[in-house]
Amino acid sequence: MGRKTLIPIGPYHPLQEEPELFKLYCDGEIVKDIQWVTGYNHRSIEKLSESKTYEQVFFLVERICGICSTSHPFAFANAVEEIAGVEITDRAKYIRSVIAELERIHSHLLWVGLAGHFLGYNTVFMWAWKYREPVLDLFEMITGNRNSYAMFKVGGVRRDIEGSKISEIRKVLDVVKKKTDLLTGAVMDDPVIHARTKGVGVLSKQDVIDFGAVGPTARASGLAIDVRMDDPYAAYPLVNWKVITATAGDVFAKAEVRLLEMYESISIIEQCLKGIEKEKEGEITVKVNEIPPGIGHGRAEAPRGEVFHFVMSDGSNCPARHKIRAPSYVNIATFKKSCIGQTIADATITLAGVDPCYCCTERMAVACDSGTGEVILNGRELIERSVLRTGELKSTLKERT
Amino acid sequence: MGFKSYCFKKSLWVFHFGGASCNNCDIEILDCLTPRHDLERFGILLVGSIRHADVLLVNGSINLHDRERLLEIYRQAPKPLLVVAIGACGCTGGLFTESITFAGPVDKIIPVDAYIPGCPPKPEAIIAGIVKLVNKN
View 1: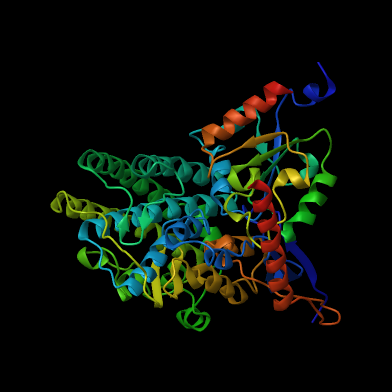
View 2: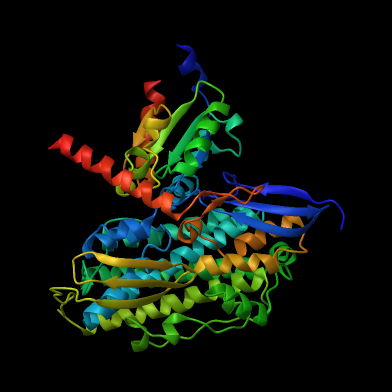
């Protein structure tokens, strides 16, 4: 084994929007090993969630990640509704699915753009982001905000989609479909993109199973795993659609899966809109008076894979324990397989290929001194910090009153 | 014309520091550069290194881990430098003020010239904020 050069990417790198650090150990141009370090984005959301009421937690989990800002409330709503034993109305189910699928379209367009940017192909970046704007305008019309929608609540949704909005959504979907055709054609037939992405970052079906990868990363390697199909929720059992898979497992296959999934999303939205029209004047919420003690599991298919929320209730108005697992957490582990043996230039697009989202992935880390192995900040110290912080907050509150 | 306004008369180059953010503000900042809003036509450009930048954009709540890095980046920046705090978290800490890893809003750590509130602020709001900042100097 020759000498290895350490090439750091991050934590504040122009290529990445979010703070995280990748350490590439290279021999010449070839990546021999990879490590990733997070902690730059930790906000202790699970702990904060225990101090908020169920209504407030929706606003908190929405801000775990700005791109999947429907998936987290969706999974949380599923978990809490499991505890409360609530069945929401069909109209609310359709509205939830419309919002989730619109989000999938904007997220996939965003990824296609960023992947182009990572390849140094900024035309694709500019195009994809330009065609993403009409979808964001739709969100603004339906929910009042471009990114964090605040649509979900326990027992239903906050806002209705009325008749006039439905025709507007259809109009925009037609535009998006045409532009997706254009973009798909441009990406699928482009010799530069073929040369840069085919055979790069290959994951076999067995690798995907071993690493427990989810979402488009798994589907691009031929594993048809999708929560919407495997554990149906909301309106997905009520509409016709299929799980898109590819077999190659490289970055090109991942792009293919995402582009084709956008067509499925458009088809799901069209069917849901028909459903909303059929359920004329239906209620959009079910009244939930209390959350009984119990545990609930909520799953939702985010654009990047399965989002899992575990909620434990003790009968009070706040969750007693809230555990979140986001898809990028398992997908990022596949870098150990897909990046090694690549050149540095290919490693960056492989890193982007799984559409990693570090604000979802962020976990509490225990700091160790690499020389002595001494733990610098352990669990007890964190609890002490928490107590100190509560004391500070209490004293500021006293000052105000 | 003072020295500071002379420095910011032409193209502003921007370095983006994403603290412990949820990605929303990051995306809206990138959105400003894409065809609908296209800030690049005014010479506003995202750069890779703080040593090339005139403006430091900070978004997201700053946690204990980020705090020292933000100070270090501010120290490395060529002065005069404009610092812009974007989003509710950047301006005040927002929802994460009570978090155990929260190290204070941006203006407790480095001096801030402009605040652009919103969760996330729309690209139009970001552009309006930058225009006001440039006119002030």
